Image (tube, rainbow, N blue to C red):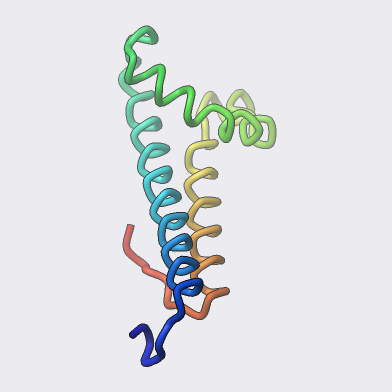
Length: 106
């Protein structure tokens, strides 16, 4: 039972898929946060963890850097912050479009 109604198998899989997408987006949010924090300590660029973080986040951050270039803000890169906001907007959009209540906690 979900919300007082019996769900069919297809609806159950649909809700599971939505939950999986939301969970993946939440994990990506944390990956973006870790990438931003790691960039503050000037990590070794050959470290496999740093390389993995860059490989996963750079396709999203690169277009955002073109919108808000760091050299115009005194070298401050706001692209991770913008990406995290976009991820939260997408998550809340999915949740609200399905009639669920959004979580306000990170």
